[in-house]
Length: 454
Image 1 (cartoon, rainbow, N blue to C red):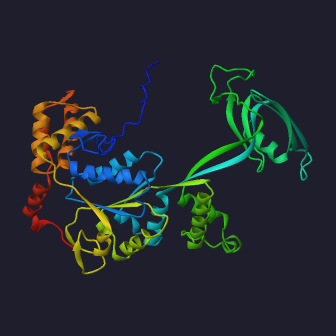
Image 2 (spheres, rainbow, N blue to C red; image 1 turned 90 degrees about the horizontal axis):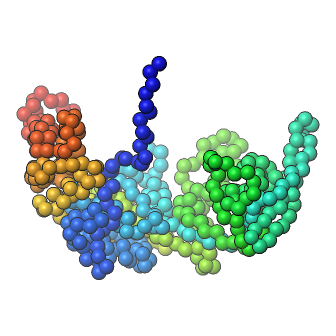
Image 3 (tube, rainbow, N blue to C red; image 1 turned 90 degrees about the vertical axis):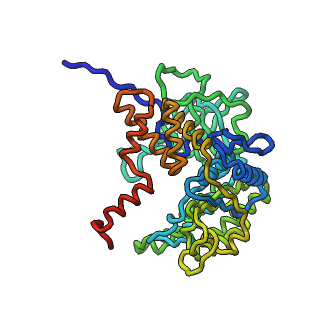
């Protein structure tokens, strides 16, 4: 019999993305850009401009504005957008999509854009509910024969004794609450909440002070014993997006036609439902029950949008509930998609006039070197100074993206040679094996007559 050891499982998610290393915009307290901070290097002017945008978003003063990030390919436009999302934190929604994603054979592009806009607006809802809360110390479920099956019992009612640090109370509840307790496998020792109005039962976990039998291995969450009275008014906070509310209301008002005749429900949400949601949210805000968190909708390669999409965005930013829209492009004077009109960035002039523009520039040699070092650290690579120097020269000659790709390939080559450090030899080998865009163009031109054309 052969006995082997099981390899140790990976303890954390190891997938390294292209912008995993970015933790923010790298600004100091005065919103001045540091040369290298939070994974950001260079582009000081663009980062400082983005810092002002972040401050205005946090203060709620930039809702309905459009920001354009423009610059050559590989100059950190997406990195700055990711930095903005990191600075805003988890409370502010950040939705990212490409300009090509709005074109679908199943849905209208304006519907896809509207859904993305609604996903980028968070609604923090505060609700006071009367609940019974405490540790379940005694339970008695009464059952009766099933009305259609005399051999089966169904719960009719339940008597519960709940305990807090300050009070103990026994309550009686109907069959629906008893059914929820059975379905959720709730037993004595659990801390539960019962909504006094809806009867919804939630198990919070096992009481840490429970006198029930304790197990060495248990998956149940341990929670402290609640204090105060058993019946109390408690505030609950829910964070949703406008699109979540749209979908909830859309399901609630489903068509009887589809129910009776088997028709397929529309994949688009009725504008009337959205208007009703907006009115309800405004009412909650006026009553102090909700707070709106305008987020960010980032559209990369936005020159791929056509005139209809641009027109829709121009109208959308004038409405009351709208996020900050960031458009990124690497185009100069370009034709607006769907027209013969040539305009700056490939955008309509009226949209550009309503926007603030952040420009990015090509990285210098020192910035490329620092970014490569950050990438090496993020991927857990040891790289010699000679290899870094060669990769930096390649980045200056071609692009930062290409040199970053060669860094990973050189590390793989070093690994195949049983070396822990990436050396100059590894970089030179992968440089010979792969082609940059200039070499690829020359290669294709060499065999131009033998290549297929359409």
